[in-house]
Image (cartoon, rainbow, N blue to C red):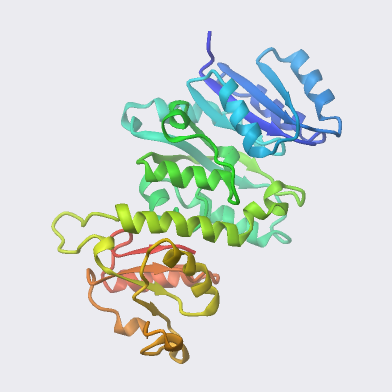
Length: 353
């Protein structure tokens, strides 16, 4: 008989932590699960630790593979999973005992029949003093709970901690599994599924302790660099602008974003570099917005593209704004200024950095 939940845990060289992760699944209040551990070519004793754990736990299955990488390991685990729901887990994190039960309850509730993926709030398991950026990112993640919050902020950063999610097993079959390329495989999956209409939410409780050790893959691999994130975001922002966009809110006269001139908030060189892939994807940038008077100009660098002051913004509905400024606190200030002028997130602007 198939289990309700398949927990997918890829691992490589995690002999020191994998037992802790496995035991957090064994302690779940929901007992109808299988744990599919994919050993991606470990060479440090992980195989021996997993063998001992499997002898004590019949719900644990170990798939041993050559070191083909995280995407191949994830997709092999997906193919072997038998559950109605697929939950992710990493070898250096810990799930709270109620995690699986709470996530299944949300996905199985009639009121959430349109939700395909659910995460949860996460606990910062590092040292705030030495990992301040990580702690701020966790705070931001935990501020996004509803499908609307997640959809509106999906181009800022990845809106989920990967090991915190659970999704319906038919989603990879309908919209594709993990993609392999020069990008973060989890973020690409969320953006692709969101573009296909999958609604995503979170259980508003801390149900995962999320570690960020120096050896974590996202710290070492170029696929998780800031440049890789911006390239990926630009691809999906361009698709949204050109083929989807947002329909006007009922009762408003605003046209869809794809029918309006596009302005980028931020005219500095880093912002323009991040936005450049938009043009390569067919998006025309009509102008920039910047608070610095020294950057304001009728034609940026002789290109004919103007840089205007926020004071010169037209009324809502005339242009669409992408806010690309990533300096700390700027996103909140831009959001507040646009909202003060009557611009509506998703209809008139999006935050992208």
